[in-house]
Length: 112
Image (cartoon, rainbow, N blue to C red; front, side):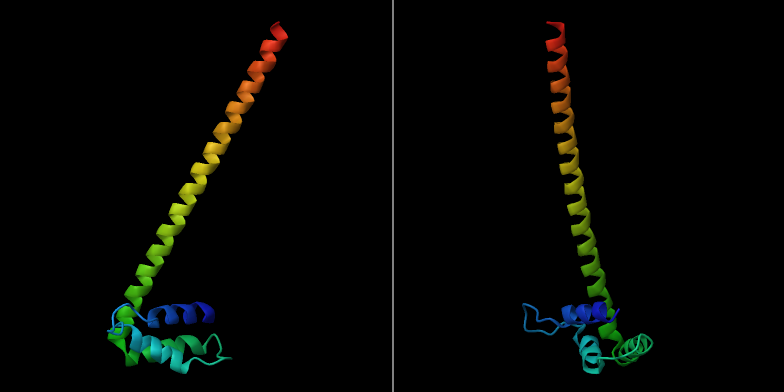
């Protein structure tokens, strides 16, 4: 859970193309400032709650950013899965056609 939290926080705090800091930066900065190695699984949600209480608007922006990132990941996964299905179907069709051709050839040899 800690690694997911850190990765998401870093993504939210990453520099943007514009010079305006992202709205989620305050929440992310709060998390990064207070995260320490060895925090228990119980302490991390408390840290998140404290940062939310301190920066509620920033948390809303952070949540929206996370939602958009999650939606993009899901769309990428779905596209990759659809491509894999298309490839598998094409391979299965080619294999079936090859098997049908071989069977027809073998049947033709038997009738001669």
